Length: 465
Image 1 (cartoon, rainbow, N blue to C red):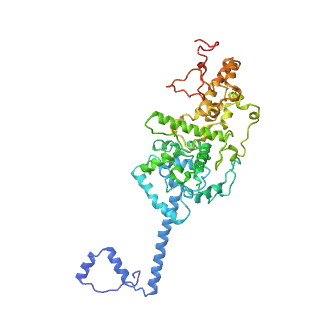
Image 2: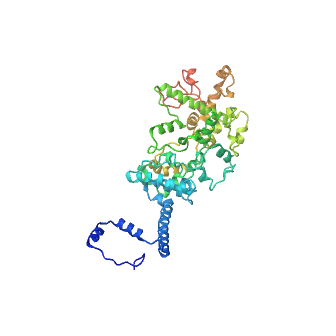
Image 3: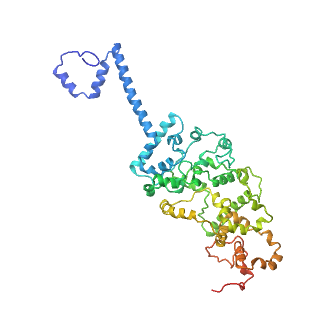
């Protein structure tokens, strides 16, 4: 008995048999389908049964494929994802799946992303890209973050920073503008997820690379964004401001826009003078913001740069409250420089992440561990160099201290302040001993007043070599 009923016996002439031999499989199946008696309820039930089984196979298989491709282990199956996967497993988000962050909620978004992601299969088969970073279509959406996190938070987990998350979100500032490093420690921006170093990525390496300064929001991002807002800009509307430029996915125009949006001081001017002007303008802007932050300069702006605007726990230390602290803190800086730079370090104010070399970092890991065991020892040379390169120091050191009183009085009475080599060393924090050379690579002093402008024959206690 055939599946669709009894087989009917009928004679087939030789000509018909010859034609049947030439008929294709699909045509024969189609012919049998047309011959089915659909008025027969038994046939209709059989068709429903076949359709049900087919649907289960198709949709069940599809769901299984989707579930498999949504798992972090599937992402890890491509070895070019080793940096991203290992940092993910070492992060606070390791208990959720990759798609919970990287695909917007909803079935349509899921399927759309699967189609778009076919290009990643193409890149994997045709050749591994040098660096994998988020592109415009893959930037983490606020919808993903708000599935778990509340937008009503006003204070950070450390209870130090006052951050109006709801206000930022309603203004259109994406979560990743501040929290871009929470899962992968900004390895793309640091340049340590490239093809030549992927073989070095292990769970232990990932733990070393997950430093707090890359996981937590970068204060440089806050400063840079607030400064742009005060100038009437909304930098977060440009995707290049939120994610690192990807040389494999962005065209030339997009790369140029990404460079322009960067806070890094770069200049392609035709002359060296133009480059110096740009650098000087950048330094002046940075110092102006620092002076506002420490309360020495105030501006009528939309977003205040003062430290206490956002920080609840930032308090002026007791030893800063003594009379004439601005002019007499040199001795304290010499003894406690390592503590001073915890707050007064302008490098923390930079938004851009410097490029790093993973291999060199791994080689230096043991050396860094040894360095942690060594305490800071007072060193006037280290203090002098820090005071010149650190814009926190140079912002004030370029001004005339109150202790120097009037110029005509100071010129004839400052000898007692520089009797010994140690006292002179404190002077050299702000002043050069000799006239700086034009081609010198040394960091310039905050002021252009140098000692030998007057002391042209040197000092009596100079040591002759």
